[in-house]
Length: 74
Image (cartoon, rainbow, N blue to C red; front, side, top):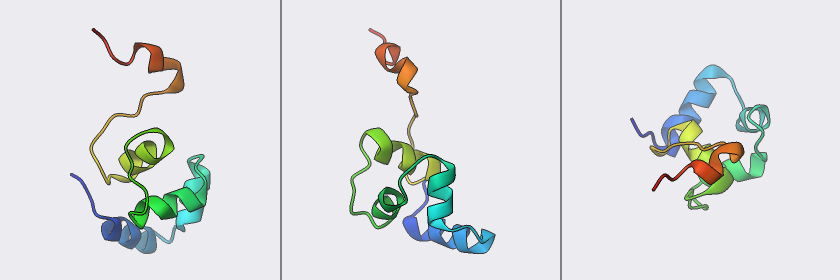
């Protein structure tokens, strides 16, 4: 189920977790997570894509760097 940025912010509040702490714990720059949640960044690839998928903002797959070369099979 895809969630809205408001859903995610509410969940952070309910759990007492700051967005910055979540970002750092997951290896993301906090400002980038804030930008994705504020919908100022289009999460189509790279870190913004991973953030959006991990937060549940979009459906998608996270491909590890070691798997990029073989991620798309002909």
